[in-house]
Length: 473
Length: 78
Image (cartoon, rainbow over all chains, first blue to last red):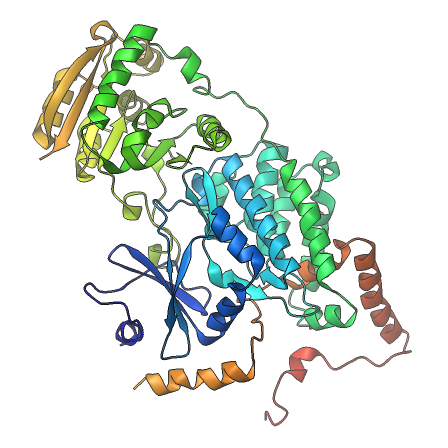
């Protein structure tokens, strides 16, 4: 009934049914739908009026032009008094628990910049969640238009607590404690509460920037006033609270966040580009194979799984609309992001911290609010270079299971097999029982041949490795 | 069948003009009070005012206002 009523309200030619975005339900003022690859947003009457005012503001136009707010078209008023918008499509949706530090930090800075600009024109962002930021390559884009609302006179910033729980605390944890924020964000859709954050900090951390006020004082005040039922908002307004206080807080938060840096921990693969086991000629041969495979056609979505610092992602980028570059090593992804961001050319590579053996699940309300990787778009090309030995030996995943999973994506695959004679595999096997009978080039070839059409094979590194181009049946 | 009920929202929205919606989010009582302190000197003055009022109530120099949660309730509520 409800879906029918919503479909009726939408004037878009209904050649295919509307699909409701299952993660779009928290704010009842609007809702996101998909239709034929288009992204549509219904607005309630109040959100629609706010939208009319918002698009008159200078900051909004400026930000849309600069690409920091998603490009949006008004499809006209609706019979229910609401509105209908169409947004530019984000090539691949990602979540903060897949971002390196730099991406969460830039999402937080974008949020604060938008707050500053919006406040100057009487608007505010009513919530403060990093899930409202998505990426066009390495460029952050704010996607939640109804988050902008006129600021009531004398009202505090309703999203401040959420900003701390989902952006500031995770960044502080990584910067001050060297703690990976991703498992925490993945485990809790609402982020890290102040009380818990406080318990994760040491006495010495209390002296670090921002901790006393944003963590300790906030946690104490939250505990003191929990369930008090007092109209604090009204009392604040009456006492003279005004916009300039929010502006000051936002400016100080911006300086605080801009100064946060992850401790530069060396991780196993961080220096891969300098220390990988190929000599220059062999590396060129591998790159040539990948480049020629990519040049066969234009690709809509490429997954580079185990991308390291993204050398091969960059090779295929000119032939692809979007490359999702994934690696479990956050430092490698951190470096890839920093480079893509600095280049300015980085528009199509999305760097994500993903461990394939424990990739992001579907989760949240009904297990559908946040989607697993393939649920956000299947690739048409997968690069899987120097990865299989990690999957089978390090993560103990049977080779046949992995090839099955790969075939299930329905994509063309460029895949490298590293034999037991290779020093990388020998290092992995040095201290563990060799239970990997399936890890053999012939087994690999026959498993691949059963599930794919092998188009090309080339030996690498004097026969210690080989690389295949395989296409789905 | 649903539409008239849906449309009934429109005049209310028009009466309210572009009345800003309060967030669907709970801003947190403690987090709101902290925002006064985070606003610098002017904010500290406001926080002082909040507490001064409570102090005056405590020493009997000022009458406590009815708790707003109850102000919001309809008076005829049985």
